[in-house]
Length: 301
Image 1: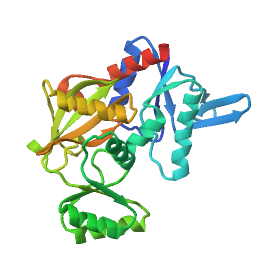
Image 2: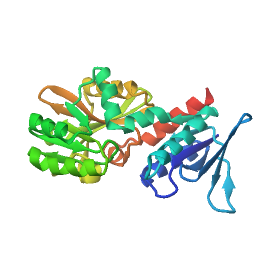
Image 3: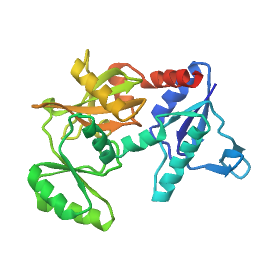
Image 4: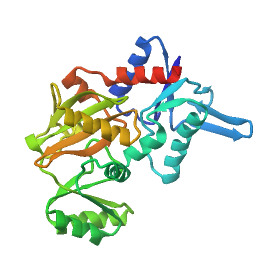
């Protein structure tokens, strides 16, 4: 069996995670094929869909695989470019290649606003959130919340995330976002018990384990310097919430970030392209192995 890893050629995202996936595939006796989202070409006619990959003028290949892991679509500079790459993965799926996570569910879970709309409809506890393109609506949200967090809709690892308490300070951020045609996503800041949050990794409806992440500041991202601590025997409410969030988003696997507050657990983020190096270090569990095993079972059906 040949298993693809969909990732950009232009830059190596989460390289350690890609290495884990590649190793898990090969130790199970299968072959790995890198499928570069930014190097693909597609031909479409009444005869069908033909996908090709060109790495140079002399080197061409057909990414003919039995199944694939969607790792990342690369640095996106334009709306049409983004949908062009999404459409390639959809074309692979249309050709009968199972991709995990499925690209439209991956797309929904990558978008914080779409994620929270889905989670709210499923009755999953989330921080109060307001998203708008009108700076005065965002300004009033900060006044209402007292302490607020301003996030990009598409971001990872805690980059570009602000905590604000003064709505007039926030107004400078909103003015900048309006000038570059970005929406304003404002979330009520919540006080987290223990000063950190949990990441629960879920694969195929099962919680593999949990880590508690705590930084020196208010951010709990490993990429921002937080330390991962293994959670031995995570409680049922925590793991069931992570499983419910993953299933409501239609994901095969995810890292679900959850905070414990005075009112109970609260989902902060979904991560369909999670980096698991901190989780692996803390728990000793390598999610790549579970993801690859799931994908092989899926492809054989």
